[in-house]
Image 1 (cartoon, rainbow, N blue to C red):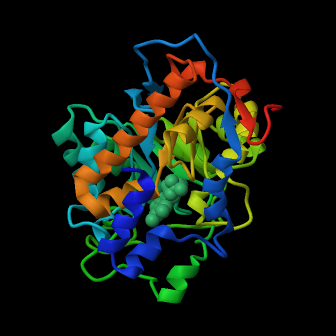
Image 2: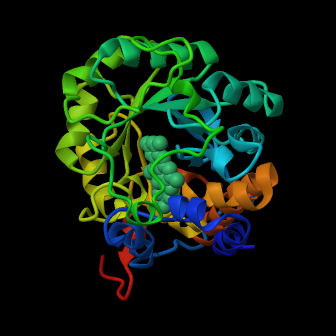
Length: 357
Ligand code: FNR
């Protein structure tokens, strides 16, 4: 089964409003479409007679040694699509050796997410995604929760100074979670009552010094997610980032930016090997993973396909998504004459339609 088929199955089990929430993007959904289409514009130039019967596709990432090269990108509200919600996603990622990035907007508290991951593996790599709050004490409380839960890295999302205009959600009137669901990590934070929910922060008042403060305030590595401009990648490294994630939020923020993979080469060059560069957006096949790794990514994230797997088949469906991508990627690596991820190099990626790079 391909990941595209899984999306059709998810569509059948989900109501139209949750389906649109996951599937949709901002504005006219140009970026949403282009993230996937961009991968069609690249082709791989295999090397021959250089392969190996045994291949090693594991990667060392901040807070995750020997992880799968495909990780679970942070996506909100898993209990909205399946009753087992984030717990099922966590068990599946841990069982497949993939990093799970659980989010501020999870409908299950980070402590419970990590506990579920530990049911499937002894030391599962779980990273916590957060948005910086203009009030430092709120950010510090979220960071402390993630540390206390046993997360091994933080992912600070920086592409959301304001919330994206999700056309389908606006049309559907989907502006709030239905009763019975909440962003559990936002409960009982400083400045609110013990059970009260603080809105998820998205603020244009957040600046680079706030990132630096968050980095200083934790012993965990901090990755910066949502970087497209190469100069911002440099600034992230200068402010202490342990990794840079090239991402346009799956086409859910600015609908006029390039496809994520098209931004990867310039960011890789700017970072110049100082920290790992990751990518998410539009990854749907093992060959997409191979293109991204050849263009300089250490690993890639997948967002929507994981949610489709969860909606269609719960924990099994998420495992299927991660296993499919891993197997397809390993197969592509073999076809390209590689034995390790590093054997995929930029000269092996060409624009589709010609062998002249
Ligand atoms: C997201 N994404 C996201 N990112 C983030 O940093 N915090 C969040 O809360 C969310 N929430 C979220 C919800 C849903 C339903 C989707 C589809 C996406 C973005 C996500 O981490 C990732 O950047 C994209 O999903 C990657 O693109 P693909 O794989 O979905 O094409």
